[in-house]
Length: 578
Image (cartoon, rainbow, N blue to C red):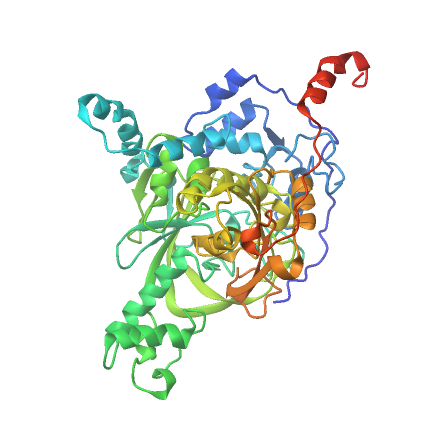
C-alpha cells in the first residue's frame, strides 16, 4: 500500500484565531488536581478549567482532525507560525470533536496532555517537580529505628499501599457495558488517518497489555496499531520495548518446547534465525538443521489486550520508561494516589482498567508478521514500512457511547512534547540514583527526545563527561540517545542559547567529540542499518590540566555584584519598562 489518498471531499471551517477562556486561580486549580476515575471525569475537569474546546462542526477522522489538531498544538510556538493558532496559550486547548463524519454519535478526544498546565493537572499536581520530589523522598527513605520513626513512615507506607491495583467484578466495570464477541468491526470507531501518505488509519493512544511469560508480571506499553481491517491490526512494538521482549520470550519458550535436541540451543537458534522475532518463522528446520522444527510453532499465540480511553494517569504510565520489574499499574496508582480499578477480560487471561472507554481483546500469533506503515511520526518524517506482528481481535467491549481517545505526532512541538518533558522531570531523580553527578537534563522537543540529551554534571575528576555519556547509553530507553551533550553544573541546560554558547566555545571537535556504535531507535531513518548505528557524545565541560589541557582557560563575562545591585535599585526610575 502506497498510502496515497484522494483529496478530502469537503473543506474544514477554520477554528477562531483566538480562544478565550477563564484562567482559574491557583487554589481552584489545586481543587481540580485530584485523581480522575476515568476519561470522562478528566474531560469534565478540563472543561471546568477552561482547557477544553468542543468542536461541533462536522469533520472527518481522515486527515481533517489531524490538521486541526496540528494547528492548535503548535500554538505559542516561536519556531512555526500556524494559521488559526494565533492567540492560544502554548499548546492550545484539548479538543473534543463531537460531530465525526461517517461515525454518527461518536466523539474523538485529542491533545489532552498538550500543555504544561494540562500535563500537571493530569497527574494531580500544580507543578511536575512535585512528583519528582515525591519520588525522591521515597528513594531517600532509610530503615526506621525506634517506634517514633516507624510511625513517621506510615504515610509513605500508605502511599505505596494505595498504588496496588484493585480488581472489580465485570458488573461493576463500565468497559463491560457493551460486549461484542461476534460481528464486531474495529472500523466502526473513528480511528484517525493522520497524514496523507500513512499506510491507513492508526490507533495512536492505545494502552497495550501483555504478560511476561516467565514471571507473569503485567506490562502496559503504548505502540501504534495500523488498522488492516475490522478484525486485525499491526502491533508496532519496537524491538527494544518490553512487550516485544514478552513476544520474544514466548517465541523462545515455544522453540524450546519443540526442540529436537537441546532446548537451550533451540532458544538461541530461535532468536538468531528470526533476528529477535523480526523475521517470519520458516516452515522447516532452521538453517537446514533439525534444531527446531519451526513449522510446529505456527499457531502458537501470545495474548494481548488493548485499552483505549483510560484515566490520564494510566495513559501516561504506559509511556514512562520504568524498569520492566515495575508494573505500570503501580506507577499509575502512585501518580493517582489511589488504586487503578481493573477487571478480567472476556476472552484472554489479562486485566484491563475497568473504566476504559474501549477494550480490544485478542492475540498475536508467533512468527506471523505483516508489512506495517508508512506512518508520519514524531521525528517529522514518515517511518517507512517494516514487518511487525499482527494483532487478531477476539472480542471488543466498550462503554455506551464510547469516547475515542487519540493523539497525533509530527513535526514538534505537538502533544507528545509535553508528555516527554513530564517524563524528563519526573524521572530525573531515578537517573541521579544511577548517575549521581547529574545536576539536570534537557530533552528538547525539536530533538524528538531520543536524538538529543543535554546534561549538566558536577565534574569531579578527569574524563567524567565521557563516563556520563557511557552511563546514559546503558540506561534503558536512554540507550537510543543519538547525541549526548555534557556541560558543567553552572550551565542552565534549559537555556538553549546558553548551551549553544558553551558547546561552540568549549570544544575542540577532534578532541571532545566521541563516537560509538550501538542500538538505535527504530524510527531513525538515517542509521546505517535498522535499529543499529552510531552515536555521538560532546564533552563541552571546562577542560582541566589533568585532561591534558595546558592553556589558560578564560573566565566568562559577568558584571560584578555591586554594580548589578546598584542598577537594580534605580531600574524603575529609568523608565525603560514603560
